[in-house]
Image 1 (cartoon, rainbow, N blue to C red):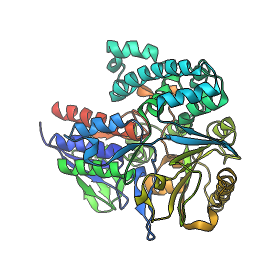
Image 2 (cartoon, helix red, strand yellow):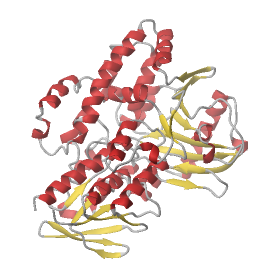
Image 3 (cartoon, one colour):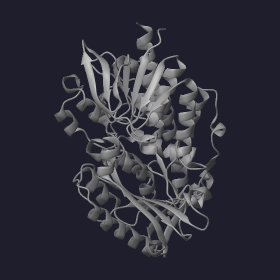
Image 4 (tube, helix red, strand yellow):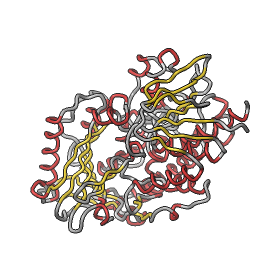
Length: 492
């Protein structure tokens, strides 16, 4: 196979994954990153006063996907970091003096369900058995397809599996066939909040997320989520991948149906193949007449949420918080409508608090606490410092009411991050944080394609193409695209 010079735009997880496979196959691979650190949305920063903040992903789900990646390069997860399962997996704050810690043990969870709704223990077993089948088909077969043609899905196992995936049944109605208690329904619907549609508009196949949550568990890599980014970087470099940081791609130069060079802030660079792990829409804007999709196409896409984030350092310990904390003390459906149906800044948002220092002392100075606060919001909203501060005060007031502790006097570090930051740092379309919504009309073959239809040497990876948003799908996206490109090179 001829050795090709290949560029990857962006250093997110999909690019790191993709580069590793391409370099392992013997190609000359360079990752070009506009920021001063790698990892994309999974970056990390350290403050002068000793706090370490993961900037984006904070939930480590689907450990089997990480392990599968590592094994292909002769490693196992424990070669890079200590991975521990959290117990409780998380806690849910329903209201004042109404808090439930969700146990990691399936037996304890069955007891919890049974107390809420007699008979639900057996139903939970049935629900998870169905969810496991969807997980095995979805995460082992379907997501590893390039989704460029229908014949990819002609395998008898996949075809039979598709009939079991309940693509045309809504997630909301599917759950209610098993359970009726509002707490149980909220627990099972919460992962959907970040998939990009209301539970009523999300296919039932995404109950596979409940299998990932309940059966596979919620984990944490000691040292922070950035530990897996460092693991991916190490693997990529060991294969021979080179990195160019603080380098923006400002133009994609084409002729004769091919890219012949990239214009960058470091000058003109020539490559045989280009794979964009940057925002798909942004890449398209650099292509002009060679874009796969029009402006109107992108405007019609249903996006997953953006979010308003706060990174908070406290000079003391906080009571009544676990590592992961879901504040469901307001109406779930109203907040979902303000994200997906009637985009607006939420009136009474649900929110999430991560406190990794409860598990990992290295994330904060001794006797201190590291907090990560998140409100999911609609993409494309107008962002301002005044708006951010309004919501910060709203969150801290609710925190005080629900956990009985006012964090404001103890804050020694505070940083916010929102729509305009996603746009500035990642060129994110409408400032999205989680990519495209996982609706039926934006699944598999109906997602933006991994191959440019005008240029023979341009491909795409990441959360705006197959298989979709999230760390595990991004790992898979990089592998799928790399192996597809390798096959194209072998045909030359």
